[in-house]
Length: 284
Ligand code: AMP
Image (tube, rainbow, N blue to C red; front, side):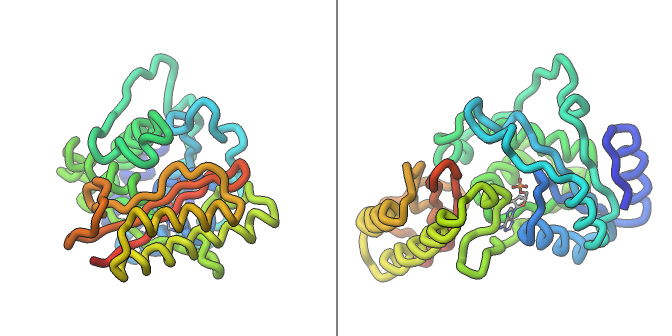
């Protein structure tokens, strides 16, 4: 595996890889876990070569968020990626990604506005901007994102279509199902922030979501199922709930009542100082 930190060697490395077949990109912020590695394995299965980016993107963190605390373990991550047979690790410095005078931002309206977009103003502008840059830098044939960040995946699909990344490159954006711990908690680099007690309580989130989905699928009004979900989370020690919302899975429009199209339950809630997000499919 080749590791590069600057644009010039990146361009030569990706040109070499693209000359030999298809190239996949897996964008990450590092502190890799099984969720990330599942994306990498899916990329390896579908493409001839795999590039992984590790970049803790300051643009997608709010002023009072965890940018400084976010775990940075590049050597360990590089070892894991090497073991997975990754061809190229792109690990730019902030100054290489956003040189002095950088002044461009990509905003995706509609799908980025509710849920995490409302709770974290500017977050998805930061995500869309860095992913657009990564697509231009790496020019992959395909890119892989986790359904863990369901809204992010929707924002990136919209951005890629709107900005014509789908022609001539990034022909496919693949979503990969959520990888969970044995107790159901969705894997996340941020789970490392949880104390031992909080880690035990955290599994209440997916369990309560499953229970709420069973109620909705059984015919209960979403508002009452979601109120029970909020009560269960509060009883397990969760703090403010940013949102617990039934949505159209594609447009992310909030739903008061079930529809025939695919639906998704999306939740963001705090446990101590850690913000957890999760989402699950809901059937009509
Ligand atoms: P992050 O490093 O948190 O920015 O995540 C990088 C990519 O890995 C994103 O596309 C995430 O959606 C994906 N990802 C993170 N956690 C998981 C998980 N538990 N299951 C599947 N994909 C994940």
